[in-house]
Image (tube, rainbow, N blue to C red; front, side, top):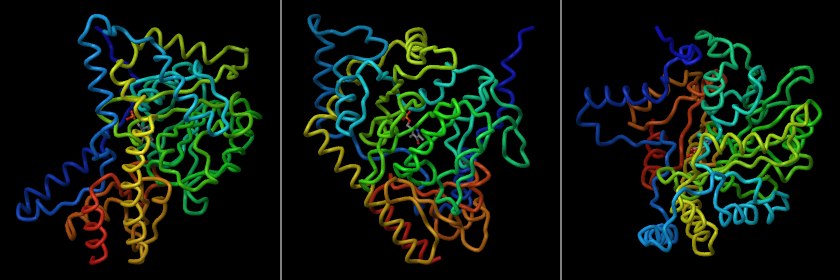
Amino acid sequence: MFKANGNYLKLPGDYLFSTVASKIQGYCEANPEAAGRIVRLGIGDVTQPLAPAIVEALHSAVDEMAAVETFHGYAPDLGYDFLRQAIAQHDYAVRGADIAPDEVFVSDGAKSDSANIQEIFSADARIAVCDPVYPVYVDSNVMAGRTGVFDATTGLWSNVVYMPCTRENDFAPALPSPDADISIIYLCFPNNPTGAVIDKERLQAWVDYANEHGAVIIYDAAYEAYITNPALPHSIYECEGARTCAIEIRSFSKNAGFTGTRLGYTVVPRDLKDADGVSMHDLWARRHGTKFNGTPYIVQRAGMAVYSEQGARQTGEQIAFYRENARIILEGLRAAGYEVSGGANAPYIWLKTPDGMTSWDFFDLLLAEVQVVGTPGSGFGPSGEGYFRLTAFGSRESALEAVSRIKGL
Ligand SMILES: *Cc1c(COP(=O)(O)O)cnc(C)c1O
């Protein structure tokens, strides 16, 4: 009799968002008159439609697909040159980061890339993650058999190095000890869920650590478009030495509304070599060529529009809109006496629950008393206990309404 992959069986259920959904449903059934009042600030999805320049590019690419002379079949595995060049120019060269177009691997999004990238590392590579964390990094390593077992009491996996992100370190982790024996370090800045950022000096210290200890940093920069502070790096390749120790993952989801259109990319520099001199660039190209058949032409054309003058202006306005939501929530709650962070260069606001309440108790309180929904911080890891995540991706009305209701609690 066949057997399932035992690594998958180690995974606890994905309780966070299903528990949130079932609690909302339970509330609505018990209080049908209040159901229409619910304000949702738990969503990690954008709500603004695709910008006109992007829609126009999509339409004209679809027309190309309809004529034999301009039809496109399989896209190149690693992405069309036009997009790889635009990315190297607009996302890297202009920031002084030295990345060649053929070091850019176009994909269907950052979630799949951040889950798949672990495949090109040794099965016994030890990983380090922030706590709290975007769950994909850990779960993909569990599936690959790179972790021990999950301890439901502590909420931690064995054989994973956790780097607590707390108010004491401004939610940016301290460097691991020199003898931690870590191969892969996952970092995400601006951060989901905390909205924390890292300045160039501190990121440089991570790059130096990785180079010194033979580790690689997987840098998830999905939220770089939300950075306004000029002192903050948008890319890890703004740091010296990052070409020999870092892989960067980016997405068009949060800067241009591609959550349902699907486009992202991963940068693997040619200088990134393992202990035996193996090129990780070549391995990722091999992996892409075998397991991925390219991002659709029409989507890559839509992605090009993000770099056009009009597209950049229009998506910039959308980001500014979400950023203003974040400011309203952050400043409103701060004025009401809450301890809040993030929200300045990120679309997430990280709120300390009042009176030492647990994350879930605060969730229940907000739902029952003011019908505002957020995400319990403990769902992202044990260091998230006592915190609560609110997102800026809703409407202006919902941001204003949520703040005014929470103030009135
Ligand atoms: C939303 C998000 C992504 C983007 O994923 P896509 O698959 O490109 O939509 C990546 N990383 C983090 C941390 C995110 O929150």
